[in-house]
Length: 309
Image 1 (tube, rainbow, N blue to C red):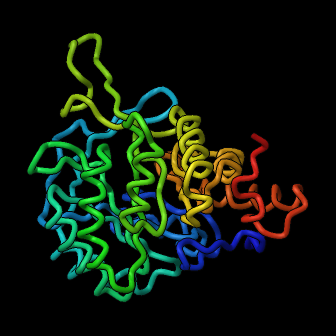
Image 2 (cartoon, rainbow, N blue to C red):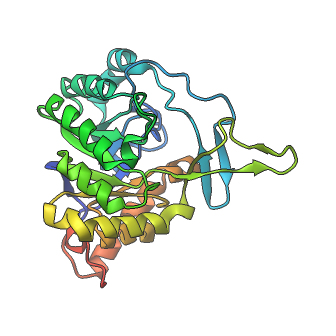
Image 3 (spheres, rainbow, N blue to C red):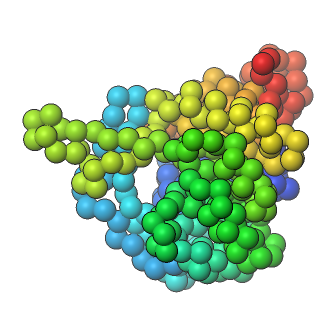
């Protein structure tokens, strides 16, 4: 039975349920369709697309970690032209909302991809991955409020009909300041959080286990960090600004998703969990449905931000 109490609205776009496949976990659009029907998800975020093709980092670029995984894939993708010509047409037949993920190393890169995505009828939302170093100064857009505002002030005009989600990095001293910069820059929604910077070392070879060295930690190990940051941003700015949050980080059980909702999330992303079991979103959705009923609520959004703090 399909959940009936879980429809949500994200930045004006209706989703049949709050479960979103995080960027890249379904490949470009359809790679998991054989094991997980897209209709079971509220939305799918594409692999992050850059202006030019990228081969990414050499192996190893994804490794296991206790309570999660580390990755340094390096934004490997076919590039904007290849995506629009060869990958995006498949999205037209997918029975869920598709969110285009954008990455780049300059403001011009982001603007070019955003404009192309805005011209596509199949992408009502885009998500900006701002955890990328700016080639002009070497700083990550998502770790400096001024840099983020400059980026968004350029991208926002390129999105005429498309809603803009900004995916924030947890690797900052003040996540509320970054969220405020995103909202000031015109974000229609915020995703919290991206991966946590981490390092794993092979004790036999004394070399980093990832080819690049450091990478991003995801999975259950970062879940409490995500809950804390979602609550901070919701309580300090997003609730009053009316900007919805996609809570992301270590969701493998319905209770994890429920925590993020109580902290302030409108929708919940799942990433690492899909590498473990692509059908976990079905269990999470069923669990959330039962939880909403047990809480005596008619809809999930009645519980958004309702932690007793």
